[in-house]
Image (cartoon, rainbow, N blue to C red):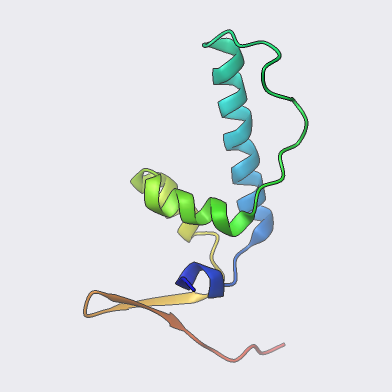
Amino acid sequence: MQIIDKIDVDEIKLENKMEREIMRYRKFYYGVLNQDGKIEKRPIDVDIKNYAKYVLVEGSRDEKREILNCLRSKLELKDKTLYLKITGKNK
């Protein structure tokens, strides 16, 4: 299990970012590649955590920073190792 699977994320922020990326891709696909009708224009069901993993591996520095801003959990970098900082939830 990867650390991203354990992290609490702001799913609304991530969903909004992912939707913007899907729309950007579709505009590119239809506008630049002139590929009308080859991709369905219906909503795409994508796992939020898989999207975050992809961006953290393949994304630009700014895209990675935007994903990290969607995390609710605290991360700690110590001796080149990333730790998930567990804290009690107070309501």
